[in-house]
Structure formats: structure tokens, C-alpha cells
Image 1 (cartoon, rainbow, N blue to C red):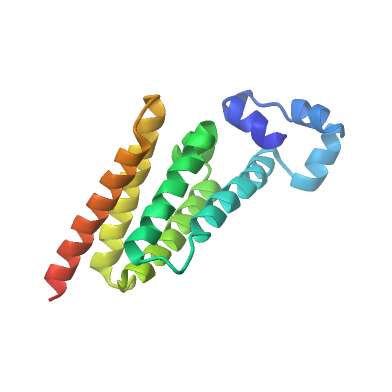
Image 2: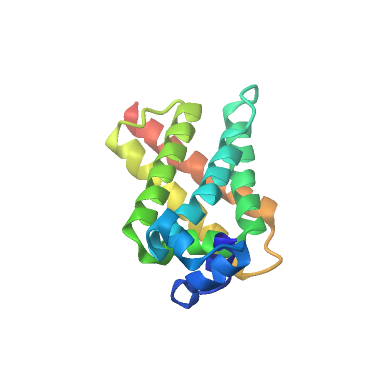
Length: 177
């Protein structure tokens, strides 16, 4: 319920009284459990982040590296398309709260670690970290742009993301050789 409120309106326009009323509890009880509107917001986002993470991790191990990445990118895109307001909110920094930004960034690095391991890359190398973080930024920006233009071709976006990844990884491997 709280997440619905935060995604439907700007953070400043959400009233804890409205959330409490929808939940059938008192305003004081919400503050007793969460301490503040900000903490309620951060807590409300956690299941959304966990859902994104679970879908990214649910790609079957038996596939080849490129097919696993393709499925993960498609799942990520599908998640964003299914929850466009939530995705926009998260990518815009989660109402500007450091805690939300840090949680999103930590999740990005978890995903980068998964992607690096699937591609056989050493995520501890500075160049690998920089290139993969840049690629994730490209992917997120492309997804945001597609959400702003209904009718964007999902498969074309996934293909472009994979091509960008392949080019980036190919360049990394060429420099490592």
C-alpha cells in the first residue's frame, strides 16, 4: 500500500495519514514501526528491489553465457515495463535519499558481479568494473527512454544491449591480450 502511494505521487505529496488509513491502522502505529516517512519509503522500496534482483538471478544456469545474459536483460526490461513508475522512481534516485541511492548502487554491483562471472571476467579489475558499470548505465538509460516512448521494440532494445555488451567485453579482452 505504501509503495503504491509513493509511486503514484511525488514523495512530498504523499501523506502518512493516507497510507495509514488505507492500511486500516493509526498514523501513530506507522511511525512506531517505521520511525519516519522517509524510513517508510525506504522500507516500501525494498520488496520492489528484491523482486528485480530475484528475477535477474532466476535465469537458468544451463544456458550459455550470451543466452543467460540475454534472458537477464529481457527480464530486467520486462520488470521495468511492468512497473514503469517504480522503475523511474528508483532510477531517479529514490526521492533523493542517500539510503535509497546506496541500496540501488549496491544492487547494481551485485548484478555486475553476476554478469562478470557469467562472462568469465574478473570484476576486481578496474577496467572491467568501469566498463561494466558504464554498460549498466547504458542499459538503464535505454530502458528509461523506451518507457517514455510507448511502442518501443523490446527485442531491439535487448539486441542493442547485448551488442553493446559484446563490443565492450571484446575491447576489454583485446586489451588484456
